[in-house]
Structure formats: C-alpha cells, structure tokens
Image 1: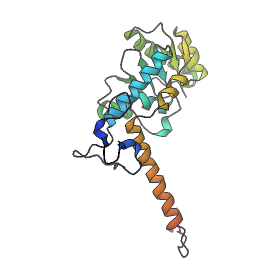
Image 2 (image 1 turned 120 degrees about the vertical axis):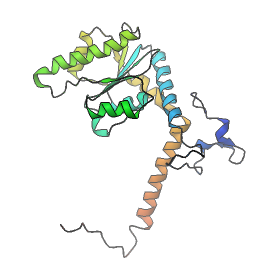
Image 3 (image 1 turned 90 degrees about the horizontal axis):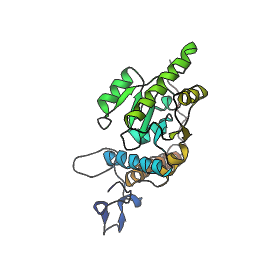
Image 4 (image 1 turned 90 degrees about the vertical axis):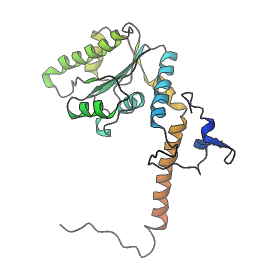
Length: 234
C-alpha cells in the first residue's frame, strides 16, 4: 500500500479476488497486533498529508492555514476532542514543500501533543484571541505573526494562503500581516474525495458498529417482554 491510495498486492489475494479494503466481509479488528497487518495508521497519516499537498499545489496555494478541527486532524493526525473543533483556539499551517506545523493550546494539551505524536516535528503554542475581551486584536495579531513566521521559514510568505475558516478579527489580522488569503475548502474537499485503503478499512469498521447496534435494537432490545430500564434511585 502506498501514498497513491491504490492499495497493494499485500492485501489482494486470489481467495477474495480483490483488495481487502473493497471486501465488506473482510473486517479488521480495532485492536492492533504485531502479527497481523491491520489498519496502518502511519500510512494513513502519510497518505492524507500527501493528498492535501497535491491538492494544494493544484489549487495554486503556497500554504494552508487550517482552523477547523477536522482539517487540522487531516494534515497533522492530531485530535483532542470535538469540543475544540471550531472555536479558534488551535490551528495548523501546511507550507508548500514543508512539514505541517501544529499550533496547540498552551498547557497540558501542548505537552501531550509533543509527547504523544512523534510524527509531528514542530508543535508551537497557539495564540487565542477569542474571549480575550479588550486584547482580542493584540492576540489575533500575535497569531498572524506566528503564521507568517512559518511561511517565511519555508519561503512561501508571498504566495496565496488557503484558509478554511476564520472570524472577522482573524481575517483582518491576517490581512494586516500582508498575507494573500484564499479559500481552502476546495483543496481540502478534493483531497477527501478518494479514500485511501486505510480510510476504507476504518469506514467498514464504523459501519460494522452501526450494523451491530441496529441488529440488537431490532432483535434484542425491542423484543416483547423486555422491561424498560429505569435509572437507579439516588
């Protein structure tokens, strides 16, 4: 299996006559082992990053600036809960020709990212302007300065920056930093259209959970005579 997302001979066998990820009856466990080649998460991250880079080049962007949690996860492999997804307290920059830089929430979240994600070489403290009251403008300016610093380190500060989401405060701060802003949703959406072999395996696993729960709901939990569960008395 390689970064072209086409699968590999390793997972294709004459017995099933097709790649493993195309066969719904061949389902991996969610528990990894050292003796069974299951979902390869290192390959998953590499394939997603390669697709994002390819679409970024095709859209003529010099970099991506991502605030939406699902997009940050797509290019960095970082996840810290849905509650942080769209509140502008963390972000990531993917410069053309360079590696992704994660700007993480200061504190234990930042430390955890440095410790638990060895595939990320560059994790920096995020500058949060939301809820800063009178300091919103100043904090957004610091955020924009940090983003521009990454772009300058990679020599793409004068090329278009694809941004997936921002509020008015961030928009003006990034413009004041001299950045040419473009919409990044086209590049990110196109990157996701064709699923990698490992993404297909994970989708099959998710569907299996849903199928199992629906079967139980239809055949076990709603059988005649099953009493309604009551909450324990306090």
